[in-house]
Structure formats: structure tokens, C-alpha cells
Image (cartoon, rainbow, N blue to C red; front, side):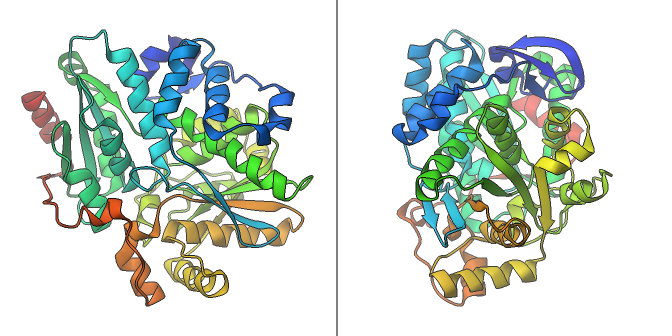
Length: 435
């Protein structure tokens, strides 16, 4: 497998280099030179395969020998060992539940695959690897769980102070061992900017062996494509010959980019739908053709509070910067907190199903989309268990919700984090002192 940079189509690196570097030196994002098509027979017979079998076939096809098949099967078996069930609401509305992994969020797919892959390639290294990750909530918990006590790897998680839910914060501040949390006095965009600056800073890179676990890392992106195939497999059995579209609650747009990847590999997706909160730079772009990043605004769907999504560069690259073609394939909608809360109450009342705020944004996007394309089956991605946002969910629904044991055990644990201003020189000095 060879990869290039979104800022330099002539660059060529192998998968291992892209995995550990995270970002190219030119501040672009790594992309595969070839996105191979899966055999038509594989797509037709998806119902015959388990999720791990699907994951292996997709990864093996895309990686093109970067990892031997026997080793890749072992990685997949260890990483993708939890389900991704689809729940049917109506004949045209489905929910793909992506919160059945250890951190109860969709990012377990990417974080666990990346942890296993990095551990595989890191066996022969003598110098410690330091992973930097910015999080608006779920990424940090998934990465912390995925890399916890992995030999030879330490993780530094940057998160915006006061802007993640209490249980999300506990997931990334209570493990200790090789996991360190930095509480940044700013926004997610500030956290992301600090991580990017560290990768571009020569002194930091020369002294510390760095990598990233954000969706900017290609190894996070690849496994996020797996569950598009898995969801399609389940829904096509329920509604044969119906066009299928996916509605994605979107922040940094890694999830949606993985959907484009699945579509390019041959999955017959009619449309991908970007559903956002008021941080709507991508829906705005799809409507106007003008991309205007800006500072993010806080909402109840906090993991989507991103004003300059990193993966837009990949989206733009995949569509050769051609707005009208992207607009044909991707539809965009955005919603306010009030609309989000109303949707949560409505779905609870009508279907007895509890959505988290991010899933509620996707539900609203699905409703808008199906008005335009009523003969389509829509699959919304429910990206996190509602208990991860228990304060907002219980206040909106005016009822108690059950807390899974995995989260309940965190409540009594003590938070350990280092408060830091969003100043790169301060962050750099801290990194060089500790690693």
C-alpha cells in the first residue's frame, strides 16, 4: 500500500510510515494512492459473512499486502470483537448502534484497530512511541481504552476543559499507567491545533517519536469503513432492492470520509448525509460551494463542536476539489440544540428508543433527507451510548436512564489531569520535559 499527501500528490510513503507519522511533513493528510474495488461477488454475498470476516476482507483489500494475511486476521480478531447491530424504527428508518465496544462509542473500531496495528509494527522498535490525540469527547476514551498498558507506547490526550461530559472525562482521566490527560483551557479546535503544531515542529519531532490517534491518522479511518458494510448487510436483508443511504452525525468528518471510502470500494450507497449541529461549515459548503472555517460554538452534541474539520481536506481530495460532484453524493443538514432535544423526546415517545444528542442530530437529518428521497432506506449512525451524556439526556427526557456497568464503575474513580493554556510553546516544553 502506498499513500500520498493531500498537499502533495507526488509524495509516496508506505502504510507503516503513514501509521506512525500520522501527518505528512507538509501538513496534509495521508491518502491511499489506490482505492481498490472489492469483488462484486463479495458485495452480493455480504449476508454470508460475519463482521470480523467483512473487516478482514475490506482491510486486506485496501492494505494490499502491507500486513501479511495471517497477522492481519489476528489483528482483526483482537480489535473487532464486539457487534454493530442495526435497530429498525420504520420501513425506511434504521439505527446502526456503534456503542457496543469497551468505551461505548464508535471510535472503539478505529482506536482498537490502530492500537493492535501499532503494537504489531512497534515490536522491533527500541525508542518509546508517544501518541498525541485531541478529543472533543469520545476519541479520548476509545484511545485510552485501546492503548491502555500497551508496551512501548504512551498516550497524551488533549481535551477542552469543561466541554466534555463528566463520564467522558472520567474515561480519559482515570486510567493512569501509560495514559496522560491534558485539560486545555480552550476549544477542541485549540487542542487539535496543538497536536498538529507538534507534528510540524522539527525540535519536537527530532526528540520524541510521535504519532497520532485522531481520525487524521489513516489507521483510524480504515476500520471506520467496516461498519458501513456491516449495516448494509443487515438492512438489505430486511428491505431487498431498496436504495440505502447513511446519515452521519459529523464533527471532524472522519466517519463520513470512511463512508466515501466504502462507497469507492464498491458498497452501493445512494447518498451520504452530513448531519451537524450549528457548527455547520460542511453543510454550508455543500449548499454554497464556499468553505468558511470558524471558531466552534458549544452545543449539547459536543463531540461535533468542530469549526474547521480536519477530514474536509480528504473529502475535497477524494472529489478532486469539485464541489458539484461532492454535492451530488453528499447531502448536508444542520440543526439547533432545541431541535435536537425535541427529536430526542419525540423518538423516546414514539419508538421507546433513547437517542444521545449526536444520534438525535442524525435522526433529524434522516427525516429531512427522507422527505426528499422517500423511497430510500436511511441508516443513521448512533455513535455513542446515551449514558455518556447522562446529564443532558436525563434533563431533556425528564427520566432516568440506565448506566452500563462500564460507565458506572468510573463514577467513583479520581480524575487526574494537567490544566494547560492553549499555548504551543508551553505544550512543547511540557512534552520535551516528560518524553
